[in-house]
Length: 205
Image 1 (tube, rainbow, N blue to C red):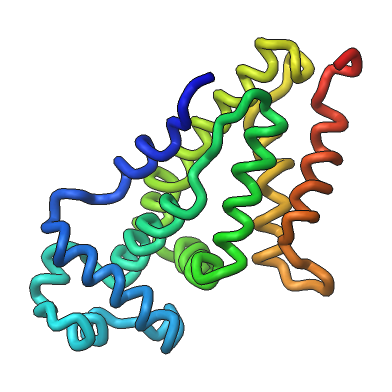
Image 2: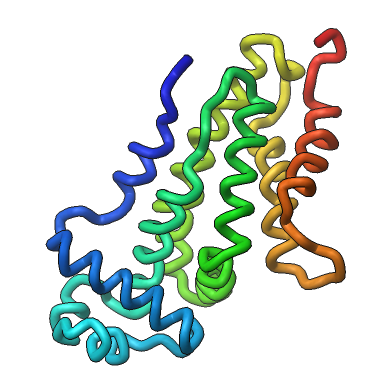
């Protein structure tokens, strides 16, 4: 079975040539300070004061605070929630979605919500979210769906993007649309997997 490809591909999306030590310190402080004051209140000046790195140095690396938050988010969520490739599509998505849900139940969820909110009004950030986070993951996930179709696990003719929307859209809906009893628990992921794959799998399996 193939090794997970997500770790390498997604880690490649996080900048590595900016001076590893300084970058790591700045990103760590951004997460720490954002957790304290809220990411909407986070500023480059505050990060500079806390990290001891000159404001001008930070601005040379990131054009604004949201670009920095984006890198901080990517550095953590890529480590915490890689896509897992297992023997079947069902097993792959069950493992991957549970890792993502666990990350979003913690600090990554606190970052993701304002990050996606800001991306709705900031075209550059929206493009960065798409090209550096969403699309790299979706392309790996599309391949999992295609392999499932090719090996007879899933029905032929399925649109991989619709499958991914049905699976992952449930997570983002629960996190971003407030309503009662909307926990994104492992048991919820199991229920989503059972419900969606009930309509995806070939009946003969």
